[in-house]
Amino acid sequence: MMEQQEHMIKEEILPLEKLSEWFDFLYEVFKEKGTSKQYFINHHENDPNPNSIFIAGIDINNDDKIDNQHNSEINIIGTVKVFHRNIFVNNKEKNIITIVMCGGIGEVSTKKEFRGKGIASNLLKKSIQYMKENNFKLSALHASKLYSNFYSNLGWKTILAYHSCFTLQFLKNNLENNLENNNLKQLKEENFKDLDFENENKIKEMMDLYDLFCKQFNGTIVRDNINYWKKWIKLEFTTHDCQSIGLYEILENNKQQEKKENLICYLVIGPNNSNNTIIENENNEFCKIKNFKVKEFIVKMERIDDAFDLFCKCFYYLLRYKFNNLITTIDNNFENLKFNISLPYPLFKVMDIKEGIINCYTENDNNQSNKVQCIVSDIKEKDNVDEGWMYQLIETNDTNNIDCKDFISEEKHVIWRTDHY
Image 1 (cartoon, rainbow, N blue to C red):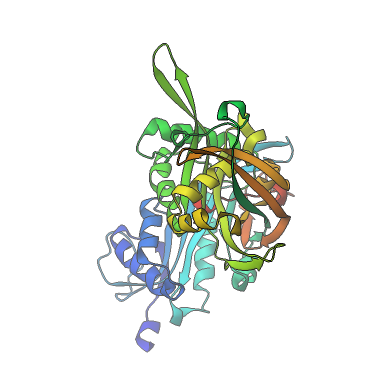
Image 2 (cartoon, rainbow, N blue to C red):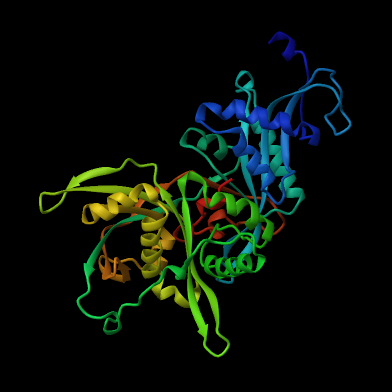
């Protein structure tokens, strides 16, 4: 320890040849939280702008700086990464949604024996200066309650992100009438398809859907880089045990004997960290409640009035065919299973969720036609609030008397879990 204290601590952009050492450093710092080394590798390799990494290091040769030509041993003791992002924000003066550059702060860490020496603070100040020099408008980060005061002292301000919740229960009833006499739309398995990240035309269809839908929110990441979809989004759609599905409208051209698929919506959802519970229903029967969190739900704007109906269809399909650990429970004890769904409050408002019964669709099981109904209950508009999101207005000439909340309205604040850095 005494030998380390003799060396000069320097703050520089991470030399490319030290990238592997940087991954090792992050793993050592965060391994107690269960974060894998691969997590940081994925964050770096899937990021379209991966090179804005600041480090504090000890140079055993006491050279004046760390650079790409420096070949001596460098001991990394702290780091901060700036993620280059564009986000949708509110233009208060014009009352429209606009796009600004935002520097996402991540991988903030200091080696245990060097904490309390201002290393993280200095690196964050360096990142702010970097963002000023590169015309960023905002900076954003997510902090635990333990560190919110630390970031607040450096200029970041909390903007709340509200979440809603509701409960779904699916029921199946045999249809006595013929399907053609029933006004429910029969959805076939071909209407549901896995999202294709290999076909650029399919990705662009998702991009267009996403762009139009997300312009009604604040803080949402702009995804206009196709490589971001191919790498970052493709991976994040599968993390945390999540499943995803796209719902397509199938248009048939009888003359040309062709089918055209139009993406209507897609859903990414996974188990919530909350514990599942067992309750007793009004018939003195035990009912299991399983908790889910919406990671992302995007709807074609022309179908916005059907958003909740489309959500229920996609979620039911995923329960039946993707969440394999639930299939047996659904088939055998269908009416004794409920699902508590958590989602961003602004999305809840757009979907216009109300208690009641929704006729989902019809399906055929073993040559028997069934009507799938969805019972919606226990709605809580602002069930909980995430106090961790913090923003800082990066100083420029035109930001006098402007506050972060002029850009990010808490009533419209959405950051999809898919985009978390």
